[in-house]
Image 1: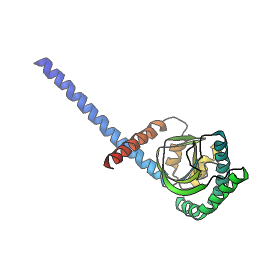
Image 2: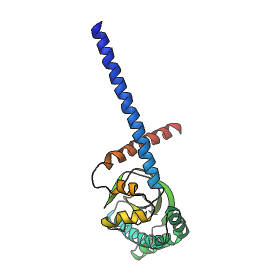
Image 3: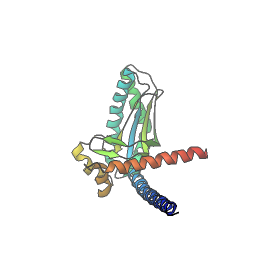
Length: 214
């Protein structure tokens, strides 16, 4: 009888430990998601999709990227925050499409191009000097032809795509990110990895629940 009670006691301790772990996961997940949402409210990402994975289409993707990024960066020097950046980009979407089409035509390609601003899901992504967690972000999405090839991602506002690694903190602060947020995405130790992985887990759970509801 005593052995049975001891086993039952151990089982309850394990259950309590699991519940505590679950509670900690829920709290950390909620904090991580809030951090991601706050970051998403302050940035615009760039997403360029190639027509295909063919060598020529991938090379054309990079040419279009350079042309669109140069013009978008020029436009967004006037933007003080994400809202102004969005407004400027929306106004200039037709021009960005034309620039991309001209770049393709200059290189013997007649694929169509679609440029739009849309909420887009991104995985955790490491760039030169900073990292952004997985989640949904407003993105300038440039689709070449069928858009079925490997794509290219970065951040167009703040101008982190074109900033040197050492200049990333200053560019992020100028765009309205807080010092804590800048520290999180640029910190040199790897502590952010677990935080960002937590966001990925929550994003996956959210997507599963949404798919079950559809």
